[in-house]
Image (cartoon, rainbow, N blue to C red; front, side, top):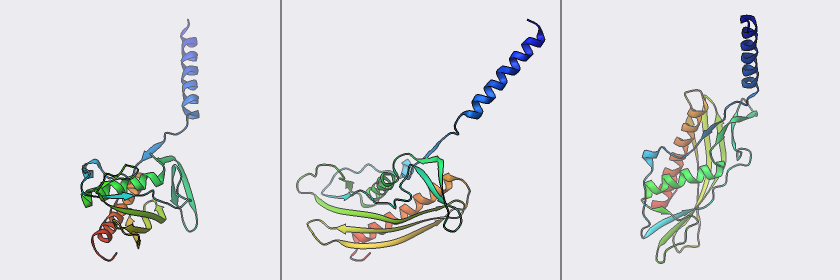
Amino acid sequence: MRSNERWQRAAMAMMAALWVSACAPPASHFYTLMPPSQAEVAVPVGAEAFELRAVRVPGQVDLPQLVVREGIGEVRVAETHQWVAPLHDEVRSALSTLLAARLGQADLYRVPQPEGISLTRITVELRRFDSAPGDHVGIDALWAIQPPGDAVLRTCSGSFRESVSRSGYGALVEAHQRALGRLADAIEVALTTPGC
């Protein structure tokens, strides 16, 4: 085989490889709202426990992809930046882990309840879940607490905003983790004091 033919075949193979790589879809990135593993504490079931029920989130952001705000009234669905689980599940799992660590109690959501346990039921609804890259995140939440053996619900609300000083989706997710940590703090206060 002459060197000219070898060169042509090598050039064609390189062009084919470039064409295939150009047609490949962009890589997806996956994110979680769960706190870092060092913040997780295994809590055994004791005399007191809580049940964090399914968390409701606004339908506009309850997508596999991150939904980010761009300017006034404009949002963008970040197709290649996705939650590792549905957003409502991510929020519930993160809050469950945070509350278990703060309260020293197990979350008995969807778990058979042992007899004689003192169980507090918690319901959370996010009214707003804003994500503005390089600027801020914001969570507006409403939560209700039903103490053990009490039919009366105590309802509280709060707004939690965190600055995002770095660019990138990772910084945005970290800010949401901090905001959820503040929400967990507020729920803990409502659980351990008469007020909200």
